[in-house]
Length: 239
Ligand code: F6R
Image (tube, rainbow, N blue to C red):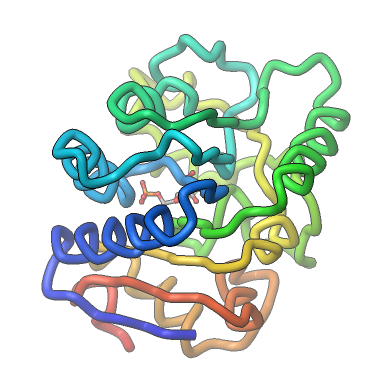
């Protein structure tokens, strides 16, 4: 595992965008794994800028997002579908992009379909991750075991509170989501995790220096052969 520490949030975003751009330049038909939340927004802004300047072309790229809430319509501005369109896909020429369908009639079937679609695309070349304050990756919350495939998850109270900022009230925050499992995430050929801010310092410390345990989902990444953590000084303050 490589850990790179940057002065601030902006520098993390720049470094992350640079690595994604390098991936797309090296392999134009890349399969990208993407994340929502506040952490990747600066990265997406930089990628959009480079695309608009004609420096990047996503026309052969496809992407799979980590997760989606259950029960929100795709057009709901709080859905991850809407987030990704607003923050990235409306502004670049991505060939196609996929998120789990949180409104599928049979959610179990949808989870299996999503894993099969990723495998059929050849697997994820580069997976981008944020990290929750409790160490979650995707919506894999602390658990007694590492979950293999895409699954329906119940969000913990701390995650519901963290996501409250995007909704009018806590009641409106969905309590369940579909998320790639730890096994799905670990099957990516390369992984980049980004973290900014002091409230991530504890999770980063445990993920990098702690024992590998399902009660700290991000600790599983230590077993992956090609992982890079890009963190700002605040998130690295306990290392
Ligand atoms: C998002 C996701 C989550 C977030 C994490 C950090 O698709 O799967 O694991 O990456 O909750 O969120 P932010 O970046 O908002 O602090």
